[in-house]
Amino acid sequence: MPAFDITAQTGDQVPLDRRGHGQATFLVVNRLGRRRRARIRIEFESAAEAEPARAAWLEADKSEHAFAPGGSAIVTVTATVPPDTPAGRYGFRIAVEPADADEPSAADKPADESADADKPDDKPDDDRAESITRSAPVWLRHGAPSPRRIALFAGLIGAALAAVAVYAWVIPPACEVDRAVYDRDAQACVCPTGMAEASLGDRRQCVCAAGTAYDDAGGTCVERACATERALYAEAIAACSCPPGTNELDLDGRKRCACARGKVYDPATRTCLARACESPQRSLYDDGLDRCVCPTGMALETAPDGGEACVCAPGTRYQPEGSTCVSVADVSIELIRVFPPLILNRQFDARVTILNRGDTDAGPFRFEISITGGGVTFTDQVSYPGLQANSSLIYERAKLRTGQVSDLRIEARVIPLDFEDGDADNDVAVETLPVAPRRPLLTDPR
Image 1 (cartoon, rainbow, N blue to C red):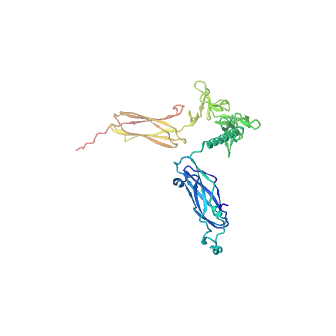
Image 2: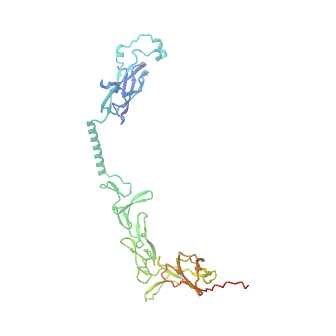
């Protein structure tokens, strides 16, 4: 019988990676009932393959091994096939043969067998003849696979794809979004018509449009009424709410979602649209009352043209921006000064103090000044962004020169800006000062 059993543990095919590397492992078992040292070598399947260049492709991790009675060893063969090698199958096997024809040396035997080392071997000669053992061939597949194998793989892949397509058609994939359905044309999960995807806490769900709720029985969205007029049911919050731009009003026990003043609700678009009022003047459309009313702080009075107008209360002015009445600050001319004293042909400076006496900050205003007489003609105007309550500012014009002996008249005024009511409250101050002649030079009486 064979002295050794050899089994290719990695099978009869050795897969190679793209660099031509691969490994095969063999299990070698000593079938003799005594210790044996054996040599291990690699043999190619054909003589052409055994040439030295190809012999360098394969390398075993063991070239010799001492086997105990019934012992075994793993032999690993590493393959490295050069990239330029022609495509094909290259076979090899391992061969195991005793290191010599006799029993192992005394050094390799147990102590109790050393005494019998000189005794002749009574084993038959045919045992030695059967001592060389070869494994079954193992094949290296290099390069492109055979057309038959390609056709086989293509057939298997096609069958798998067909099976997947049939399965997907018969049983569509599950959708992660609640209530979503699989659209075969789009090959994706989509929300049904009239619904949109929304995040509800830690889950996603297709929810119905505003004003509708999901009907579990029919699997569709149906109208959902609300107690408040114009309110819309929102499935995401499971409650009714007013459309954007509107607020809930209580009108004598009747609740309605109404737009801000100056706008009217459009049921078609569910939005607030601008709505102008022709009469009374300055009035705003009230969506809750369905009519034009005066803004807060204004009263309905008869206008000069005989019509009706909304008029601000005393102490306030109408401001078109915002259609509101704002407090009028008490801005006035506090003091007009010139220095030094006015003398013919001498320079002087003019200074005006503007004061806000009220407790309300003043808005934008314009300051105007006119200086005439005494041979002087000067006008100027300056715009100011405002003036804080109980504060003042100073306007100054320097290096004016008198030209004749007469009264110098200074007129200054403050005109509030951005008000529609005109300048009825403008503050005007006038100051008249004489221009003195130059004094003659004093001479020495001596």
